[in-house]
Image 1 (tube, rainbow, N blue to C red):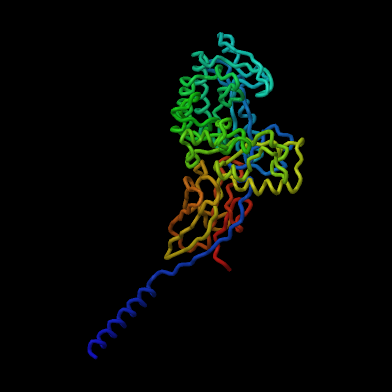
Image 2: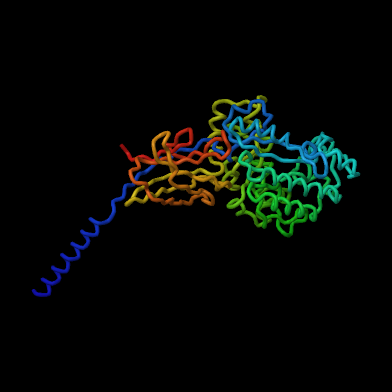
Length: 446
């Protein structure tokens, strides 16, 4: 009996200790938030019309695209004119959009893309009929000419000094080489820039643009027969035949398809740190997001999921020559919302003066700009930023918990991700509680 009495006393002591521990442990107030799809015009992602599109406002978007010729921007070996860029930036910023752009030296049907001073210096130009590629007459400069290469290097350095990190700019596609700046002169491949020239251009971009993402047309590994290796460099890629020549088919004639090139280059994980983008193939502009897609379309949703694409140029939804019924617009919005990042705040909690906020990425890609997430407290007009968090590097399917001290006497909080471009659209979370102006309230349930 004595042994049982000691065991009973021991058990009572354990229970008493446990009760004291539970009584002394801080209470946690946990608040669940409700998922709702984020808007299709969240910044730095989605569909991107040309600045000159004639019905640009009929579909939600947060960026616009524009071509510049090098002739517009360079008047001498060391003379630059940024007025054309600033003019377009004023248009896009006025509409709350970041600009994505490309500078080119040749465009089928145009003969005025190369700066005059290079022609006067004697840089050779080959005029040729692009046939079905263009169509039109191309004017391809001699990419082997050292004077041209020196000009391109000087231009990239000046462009980076002027615009790297500019919040008005979302992305830049590398351009400069080949038809439309797309790094090819198909079918006249002998006219394209050799690998040595490509390497110099790639080096110039990596030096001049440590911040603004630069995208290349073609992924290439060290065994690529035409392109200098780039999969080991900090570049994204753009697939300009999206949903047409995107997914692998296994056919020999389709070796140029985007995912095949990515795999051969060893770059299928490039999206985790660098953006994937492109353009919906023009052949699909009439039928994209309709019940009767083009017979050669590979499937928009599958292409988005496989490539982890963040943004795509498009004209099919932004020009009057293409029909846009309410059903097509609704279908397009649903598909576009799947592109790029989508951040959802799933819950927040307070424990003994410590605040914890859980965020998850429900999209197909991370965000490639490190815009600070602000935690704000206080009434309107008296708001104070009490902490800054980061969304950078948060991959699809991952969660992150932000922690910070909870200011004494605070009556709830608000999250926001301001667009660093004045007048730009704020990043909005995929939450039912999200407000259109960018504010996401974190308030205890009433």
